[in-house]
Amino acid sequence: MRTDSLLTLVLGAMAIGWILPQPCLAETKTSAGKFAIIDVAYIFKNAASIKAEVEAIEQQMAELQRYGKAKQQEMLKEAQAIKAFKPGSLQYAQQEEKIAALEASLKLEVFRRRKSLASAEAELYFAGYQKMHQIVSQIARYNNIDLVLRYDSESMDLEKPDTVLRSVMKNVVYRRDTIDLTQIVLAALDKTQVAAKPVASELR
Image (cartoon, rainbow, N blue to C red; front, side, top):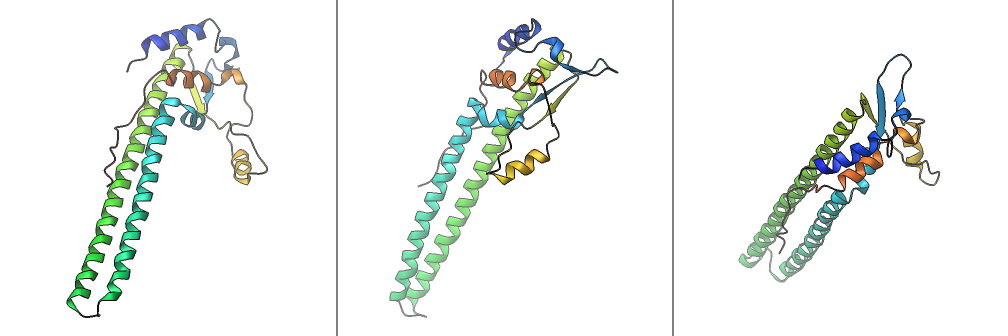
């Protein structure tokens, strides 16, 4: 799905200083180069077109887990049933084969389904990143931005030690909001449709 009309509107607005004022873009004293920043993680977490597909994949993964647990309960019943047969008897051997076949079948089915879902998720993020990159590239070229850096806008929270460690390791310590392309790109991305190949549920 092409986004030419949307980007024309966004870029035109930027040109007159509505969204991203030209004078506010970071510029070095020794070079005419300009740079901007973008929070890629924030975009992937908040883009409606991506969130819906991610949630669908997560639902199928949860469904797969429920399916696996249900099948394990069936195998447990079969394992209990084998106690009714005498070890070494034909019935005992047949029951052992049945349990082994059920277990092998379940492992193979779960493996295939997980692989399929992982592939669908990878395709989704690939398509989303490609679309985001396209939007960023057009904005950068239109505004003569030479470099767009990735940064993390997540706040530090003492109640969450992992956020503190991530904040300490951030590459960007300070930035002006006027060089942040995150919301502009997010708005443009939400006007497009980003979707991976749908994964049909085959659980029975």
